[in-house]
Amino acid sequence: MILGDEVQGARSAATKTYLKDRRRLRAPRNAAIRSQSHLSSVSKTLRRKTVCVLRMKRIGSKADTMKAWILFMQGGTCFFPCFYPETRNMNTMDLSNHFLIAMPSMHDPVFGGTVVYLCEHNERGALGIVINKPTEITIDSLLERLDLKLEIHALMGRPVMFGGPVQDDRGFVLHSPKGKFSSMLQITNEIAFTTSRDVLEALASGSGPERVLVSIGYAGWSPGQLEEEIGRNGWLTVAADPDVIFDMPIGERYVAAMKLLGIDPLMLVPQGGHA
Image 1 (tube, one colour):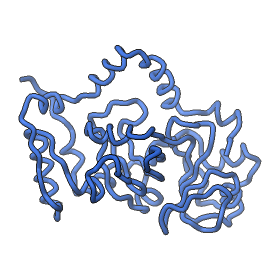
Image 2 (cartoon, helix red, strand yellow; image 1 turned 120 degrees about the vertical axis):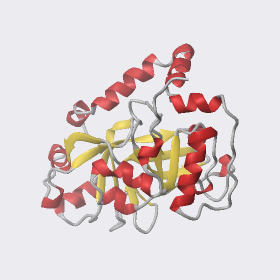
Image 3 (cartoon, one colour; image 1 turned 180 degrees about the vertical axis):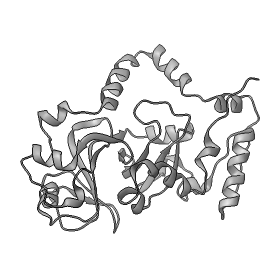
Image 4 (cartoon, one colour; image 1 turned 45 degrees about the vertical axis):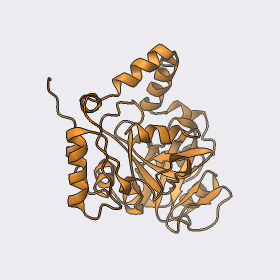
């Protein structure tokens, strides 16, 4: 759904920063510098150490997961089978209905500190919605700009999310699959993704889905791009929990997503120091 000039004018600062940085980083030299800046002190240390590959069929407990992460922090690259689907073949990876959790070492102005819900992931690429980056726009003000009046008081003042830097003049809605809308993709029995205006009309009238997350823009990856970023330890992945998307306070979603892996986010923060 196209949101119009007024909403375009209210784009988040993160989008503007992203577009500015993207133009600045097009040169190969600057791109290389940016890549280096994303390396945390931990990553630099790991490159000087022996690569440790942890081979397990399954990490069965939070304690085992934590031990695996401590091994990773102490000495090398650790491949966690529970962070990925059953197959480790990156070419056939399907992370639809998964969370992407940005590693603390990711200093990207757009994706740093984010949790992304992946709506679709296949050989053509990936599409997702950032679920923990609110804009200054609220759902009721958005509907007013579309000449719709919100009748549901529970949605009053709820922020619209910055879903990602792609098509940030359009609205995208994650919701429980109630009803049928003209541009709806049902991802699971609990989550659907709609891009058409009719879902907002239903929300405004009170006949729409009970659980909803409205965003401006989305995050997109070309074929192989996301797999490459995961291979560089840019993201952790875990099967998505609808409660984190729809019910969890925005500021708690990152920690909640991490805890789905049995990991304390504080363990992922690299410690400063000198060799």
